[in-house]
Amino acid sequence: MTVLDAAQRVQLRRLCGARSLSSEAEVGELNVVPFLDIIVNVLIFVLATLAVTFTASLDVKAPSLPGFSTTSQGLDLTVLIVNEGFAVKTAGGNVAPGCEAPGPGVAIPKRGGDYDLPALSACIRKLKQSSPEAQQERQIFLSANPGVEYHVVIGVIDAVRATPEGDPLFSDVSFRVPR
Amino acid sequence: MTRALARAARFRRSEGTAPEHVNIVPMLDMMVIILVFLLKSMSESSAAIPQHDDLRLPSARAQTDPAERGIVVTVSKSQILVGDQSVLELPTHGSVASEGAGASAKRGGAAELYIVPLGEALRRARVTDRAVRAAQGLDPKASEAVIVADRSTPYRLLVEVLYTLGQHEVGLYHLMVVQGRG
Image (cartoon, rainbow over the protein chains, first blue to last red):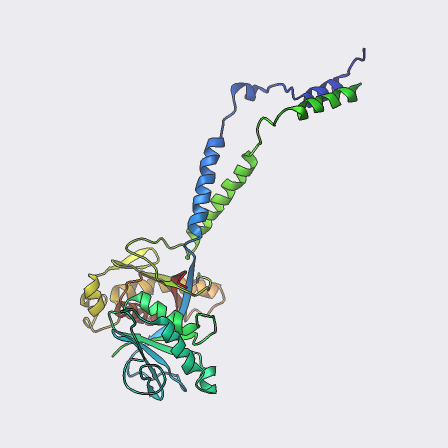
């Protein structure tokens, strides 16, 4: 019978899975798996929450007071948010309802009691394409009735910055203080 | 002989129906590290804005990255904050729509735009902000602000806040929104 030397005996014991228990193991090892299970659940929850709270920022410039001259030339486009809808003014005068020609009235009236942001975006696009100079312009002014809520203002900024298809319109938004 | 014994031992192990257990502890360790990293980065980011009844951001189509630079001014339904410090308790919503922050918070009465408590807080904040901008190689004479405002904030109050910021050399405002509206 072959006699195994010490190294061979150790190798054989290792391969057979027979391990001598250390003094620590004999005492009993701390089972951290349930704790880690909880942590994984928390991680999944955090990741799921992250997915619905992505934020962005819209850049605007300081408001100008009435009576102060502005540096804008050319189209000098202003959108006024009033209770009836959106009034649009240019250097050539007020834009009439329908956004086709100059004239009195609210260019984009409310539809079904809500502000019509897609129609505003289409109107602004039409005005931008009205002349080669207007196509180069990036500045637009925004004003509103005192009670108009912030989410409407943000909606208008969103609508005048780009079309729903992503074509850029007027990226340089400044506020104006109503008289 | 030794090799034969070793082969036999391996065979006995692989012959078993299934391993006793898969050791997932290293993977879970990794998960814990990722969790700690995520929580830390979330808490330090200005994009991490808790949404609750007093402060609910408007949503927009914009896909821009949230601004990280500038003085953070928060306008909730009930108060105005500069950074984490509350500077003004706001009156009721109806009153805010007509008079803004209220006559008592302004020097010349309700018609005035400059909000005094906000201005004082901004003056203090600008001291640090100037130093930070100078250290970053930016123009310390002009600054930026991150505006975190509730979606129902009246335009009157918004303009008052922006006007007051403008009086303290802040010329560019980053309006924080939630991405999502299609």
